[in-house]
Length: 107
Image (cartoon, rainbow, N blue to C red):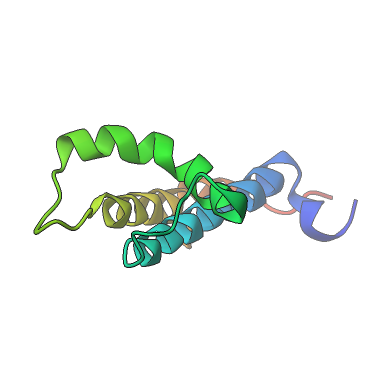
């Protein structure tokens, strides 16, 4: 095969992890912006695409971290955590990146 999948399963895992973690970060960034608009219902229409993948992580986090000055900071916490995981796995010095580099190109 040619193109993105040259590196085999590791390259595919690298690509998928990078895309999933990047998309999740983007969803949490949308959640942060939506906290400025409390009238928006995340259970209706297209907003469900933002609420559905993020809410299962935010609910238990809200039990640990109370709102600060009435502001829910849990989406910010998750942006930081996901960014950290993304860097540790698929960043320039990430684990999956280093595994790919150590296996070299596949002939």
